[in-house]
Image (cartoon, rainbow, N blue to C red; front, side):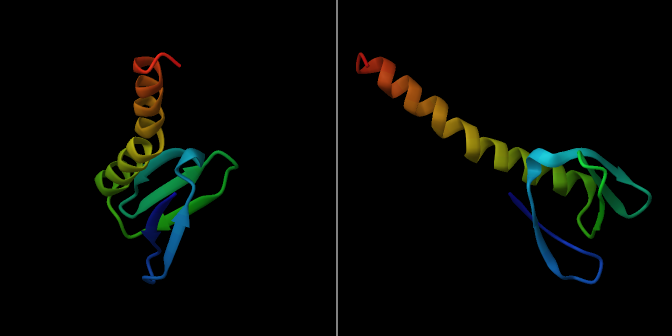
Length: 74
């Protein structure tokens, strides 16, 4: 989940896994896999950074645990 803000400054939390397209029109428009569209204050680059950060937090700990388990012979 990533935190973003609508044009009226209200915050929303978006499941980053649902993002299909992010475009600047010039507002940043996010199209989700279900066809819904969101307009947010953040730039495309900010959205990308938040998605990358989310992916790192969500997936790297799993890889680290797997490496730890393999190192301990489990």
